[in-house]
Amino acid sequence: MPELPEVETVKNEIAPHILGRTVTGVTLPWAGIVRGPAPEEFIARLTGKTIKAINRYGKYLLLTLNCGDYLVIHLKMTGALIIGNTELPKHTRAILHLNSGQNIYFRDPRKFGVLKLIKDPAEIINKLGPEPLEDEFTPALFAARLKERKAPVKAVLLDQKFLAGVGNMYADEALYAARIHPEKIAGSLTKKEISKLYETIRQVLRDGLAAKGASIVNYMRPDGSAGTAHQQFKVAHAQQESCEACGGRVKRIVVRGRGTYYCPRCQKK
Image (cartoon, rainbow, N blue to C red; front, side, top):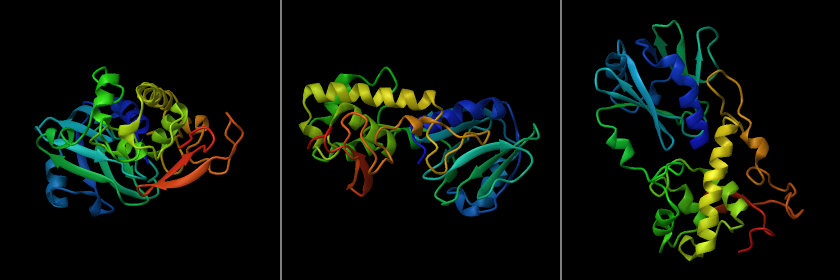
């Protein structure tokens, strides 16, 4: 699933191709990707509009249009935005045609992705917790938000209302780097554990960004190339592989319905 590093990479790499460009038309090979308004109105409201800005909030992309609308894009589990003007990528669910002659292809094999027009970005932003790489996200804020949380720390990290943008892969990596068991109750973390986890969350996200995201299955960059962050992963998607720290086997468990990878020796419960 595209997480903060993947979505931020898409934002950064697609921006030069779309900012200041006008949408000349919209093609919907699968109209179900549009979650509001109705597909016909969606096409009419988007066609002829100029893209003024693009921002990321958590795992969402928001494109500011010159009419006052905002185009919400959520890649969900298997989505990717591809820039091009020739061959149609397989599993394309929507195409935004630009006056530059290029197209934005929304590729999404599992059909979970979202396109939506909204009037107020607060509709998205107010649903999200703090951004983990922003200065406003401090160790004190992190500790305060963890206090008295009775869910497993892995589940808390995946709650987008708690922290925006962190998903399965980077939560596993951060917990491993901090040597914290994913099932440990979030509110029971010590000050030392909280401080360490704060640092490892930020570090694994920065590393993911530097590597242009992780191409485990479906994620790709706007030019169709892969990210390489997964090559640095220590535990994520590494079931039965050896832990490089202790030589033990990485194990997969399910925490609140989410597949979770950890080292039983390094992350003792």
